Image 1 (cartoon, rainbow, N blue to C red):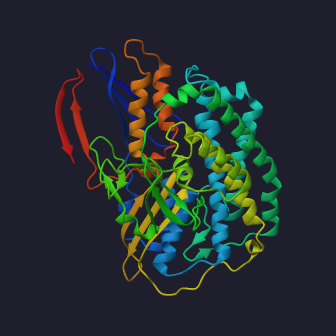
Image 2: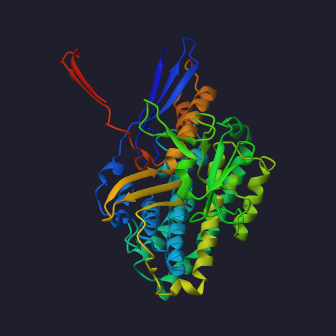
Image 3: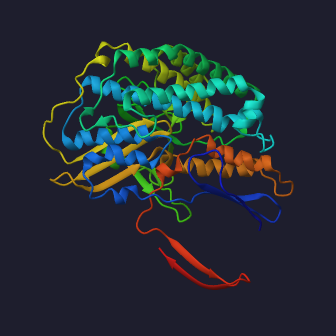
Length: 473
């Protein structure tokens, strides 16, 4: 039996590999998506004061630090018993929209773009951002400007583009000035044009590649995402809605109660856990999160241009959940347009310039769950602290973790559909990687081992002979 290893998986955040196991006839027998890094944030933050978490936990990641910053702050609000003012909530959401724009924009153009715009079979030497620059320099320039705009929004609010210091328990620490508001608004129109242009590119690509899209990791799962009181898409706050593969409701619940509905399964070949819907168990209760899932669970989008695209999205599978993995790219752009429109709404609110930035403490609670929709999907920060405010338990369920089953399933399906061991070429393996890229995984965010970290040390002689081996875990 032949084994093909793809290591590392490229154009993703974090470290992973894929192993593809072939039978004697050169056909794919099985394939695995291995997340082979380990992060210890859940354990080493125990014993710290809870109010430090909005600054410590963003260090999990340099791509989506704002998500961790704000989720941690939301958890701290509840632990401390402080409800943020309306202005503080609007300013936090504004920063969150900035991150959504920069993260989604980077993924579509710079991580997924080389596959979609240059082709899955393009030579690796050009199938990258440099190749895009050669093929369409004006488009790449606009793409960079989209990401830069999102990062500037974060900087205007938090003082810097990465790891901002902005949200604090009960609110934020800095008001938005008229000058900064106007600086953001001055770039809005051009950024919207670029995203709408990208949506046109995406729709044309999907029409041209309809056969591939229908063959590329299309499978049923449940879906989960955050909605407002009317069932509309909400990326910052609301209740969690879960639906089944037919679009029928599973649950709608308060994020504070997430442990009643979500369990976590462990496999010995990955450090990334596998969440599932408890009432159906593993694996019947698997579900997906992120842009595709959020649009599948939402009944509408509240902003006009994104709502128009949302109606087209809903028509793709006649109102039923859209199952194809590649449609994540289209859903991601719809959300980018929504984030820009929502940003404009927030900036037009008179209260956005208020200096009423922190709420009043109502009484220390000691435990809380912060939840929001990170670019990659639903993010939970769960803190429990003692009477002195010292953390005794930290639990993180990160967006990429929710999608672990889906990524593993997509890898195996794409490998079986496209990899031929008797006529192997690089483009086949790139399609397997592209199945992972569609979910835009952030693996450094999401890997948290249970118990001790497994470790094997091997002593090898100069001749390659195994002299000794010691294992732990």
